[in-house]
Image (tube, rainbow, N blue to C red; front, side, top):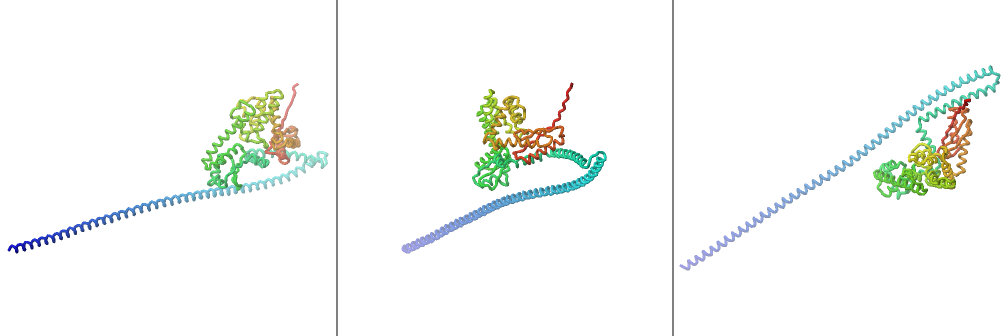
Length: 527
């Protein structure tokens, strides 16, 4: 029984153990399955998170790509807009140029039409005058025949005597009408004084010696390479226009390699332009604002240099008490030439020569030296002030309370005013000596004297001329006529004939002024 119970108990224990094992296996199977499910769920969630992250990253990439594409599109649009605006501006500028050219062509066409109309009117006027002249010629022939018959009837003259009398009368009448015509034409020319003055200036320049004109009116500036020429000209010529406007000279940029030409009649302006151009080339920054700045600075430097040159001349000649403006004017003479002679050096020579002569005569050498140094100061401003350089210089020095002796020497060293002190003829003599020394001027003394003699000979060759005097170093001829033989109208004709004969028979620099004097003196005595 016990054995049975023991067996039953052992069977129960075995079953319990088996059941427990089975339950354990089932539990671990359930646990493993739950862990597997948890891991699978976790992996699924991780995968979902990765998918969501990938989607967000893809969206961000898409958004950034869209932003970059939009930015690029905006840039392209702005660039296209800028190019379109520039093209429109260029088109508008071209249209403006075309319209200006069209306006200019229209103005030229209107001007040509007016000229054509004026020519037609002139032709009609000439035809009318010719008809009047023919009519007057016929009337004159009739009158001559009538007068001839009357003279033959009244007097006992033969035909030859009557012809000579009539021809003499006609010659006097024609000469009177010619003089009146000349006077009328001169009055008309005075109404267009500017055009006439330009013609005179251009004629003087053309007749001037080519070598001398080139030497005193042109300066050259060396450039490192021909590419610099394009920079000097600038876009559409704005740089060269700004330079010419700032300096007042002409800049010539041609095919000549390695140089630029600066041309102008004012030597100080030309020197400023030359130095400014050299500084611009060295600086490299060539644009209108820089040009104006550099030209202003160069003008200041040149003015300082001019003042220093005048001061050095005053120190060299030991002339004291000169104002700064007068010394600046003296320095400006260094940039002036007369027949190739530097005017400042000429003034210094005249100062020393006048002093030596004054010392020999027992006069004040310092006064003579001062007058000699200042005698040609008017040449520094004769292009800005009207008149002869002696008068200009004397009037200028009056402002600074200069000595009357110096003023008379300055005004009278060419014989324009009579001397009132012994220093004036000394300065005139020293001026002639300095100008006539070998190598001082391009024109020799012998040629100079022959030119003056020829000028006076031409003037005295006309009927009615009593005497003629060449003054102002041959720049002016003063003619004195007999008032009993020449009336006012004939005087105009004689002056013009002298000028024409001088132009045809003589060669001279610049221009010569013909001044004709007709004076009537009535003298009576009370007894």
